Image 1 (cartoon, rainbow, N blue to C red):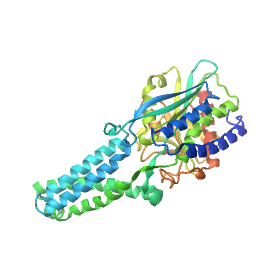
Image 2 (cartoon, helix red, strand yellow; image 1 turned 90 degrees about the horizontal axis):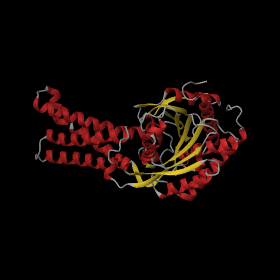
Image 3 (cartoon, one colour; image 1 turned 180 degrees about the vertical axis):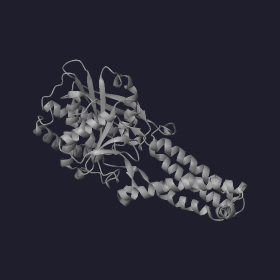
Image 4 (cartoon, rainbow, N blue to C red; image 1 turned 45 degrees about the horizontal axis):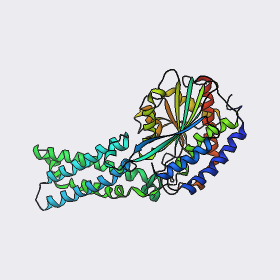
Length: 426
């Protein structure tokens, strides 16, 4: 079967179903912090639905530390701020030298940048051991083929929602970059100024060295100013409703199997799996746990496997297959990414194109890093959108037209993968 032969009514009915269900989930289960009871209850709600049209539905447990991923922003904002103030006061009182004041600030900034790189840019579980861990769950639903499993496609969407990012709430998507990158940029500049001051203390750098000694601490003052919004960046007391990010992706996975069932599609050798994972918003923890637990199975050459992660299907003008992920450091499988893009074009989304996740990551990166074929499909303004990670991400913002386009892309991808796998396109 091709997407042109797939019944249109089944897609439209599932779009309506998804829009209604998303509103119900938000209202009934409340804030879905990574690993909390609301996430688990919402997953149990989905299990009851998927029990009706899947051959097997089960939960898999793992441990995660929900606040570890972003709490360092507050910790290091305080440490850097105190280092700058202490350095200024102690050098002004002539208790320590200007150079030593710079060293104190430079060390604090370097430590913060070091942790930021590993924790936030390449998503290592760098600080998890310092935070309270909870039991989280991934929900796995499977439609088995009639015969031997020769191919497997997993459609993944995360059900947890993000802590509120105040930068976007108060300043919109365009305010996020200057405030966040300003904090990182000036912290880097403070490290550079520290190094130059140490050099100037031992080597005559002429007028430039004199300028450094007299005025360079003002750079640290600017760094201090950027630490204030960094400290306020994440509101751990408020969770985004997560209607678009990412209940739209969650229901893309659920409805993929539901649509196949309603259309009476049973594959001969292709297994279709919906993975509803928790923990994306605390550093891809759910996807990482699943990828690690099933690595041998998902990389078995006897069964060609591919994972399509769907994350936010809202902004029709911004349809992307994210072939590069995790701040551009991870490259997804080229052939499978092309298959997804071709599928989007096949259903009429001519403006869909490849893009990169320039800052942050999707769950697909967790699979690719384990050697599992994966890619990510999303439809969101990469500025980012003004509803991203804040209280504006409500069901009223759902866009049925975009959801329908996303659902068609997912179904077309499944049908094309069944027809010829990810190794070649149309």
